[in-house]
Length: 248
Image (cartoon, rainbow, N blue to C red; front, side, top):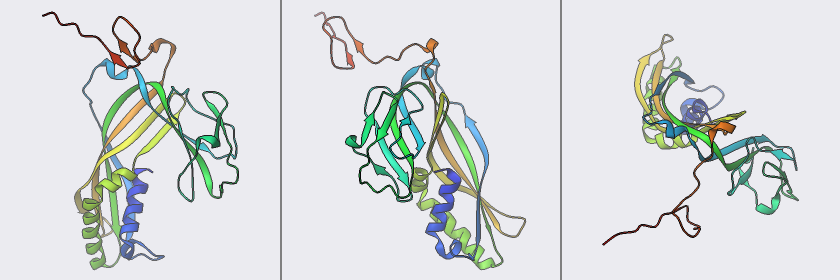
């Protein structure tokens, strides 16, 4: 869920007496404002190929077939249905892989009423780096009842202070198009200022710190990721296995 939608939902659910009903006591608006990108220290190794999480949101189309956006690496894959009734994890026997990227669903008598999407999480080998950003969100409170506005301002500040972790957890998002992907994770949410609005209401400034993981599918000149480090001698099943010799 996006940040604006998450803040709006949490405030309306948490303060129904102010923001609920057909004619709420206070009108709530939430909008994105400035976004600042912070430099992340590191070197070129941070953009070398490695195993990262891949995530696809595919329109539900009955049994399929469905196609992943990127070639998956070896490892487990999680397939879920999503829709009006929330997310539903599928069993292995409900998924048939035609090849590494394509699969069909055998849902039998499972009720799929209201299902709109198929969510797939899997591992991919990709070029990977991280960016840290600060996103500013403005929460507008307006209405003709001054007492209600004052109450709304105090309660919104209280809710943000107490539910920052819940908001952060609900605000993550994942995007993909072509060879590129971005995963947004909210690390912190905090109200930092409140000011008078031109219409007589109030505007609260909320700052969030986010980590954005950027990925790109491998190209022919990217090389291969390091999957194991072994010393000379017999093969090992461990990812890292280097014998250490000590001379007394």
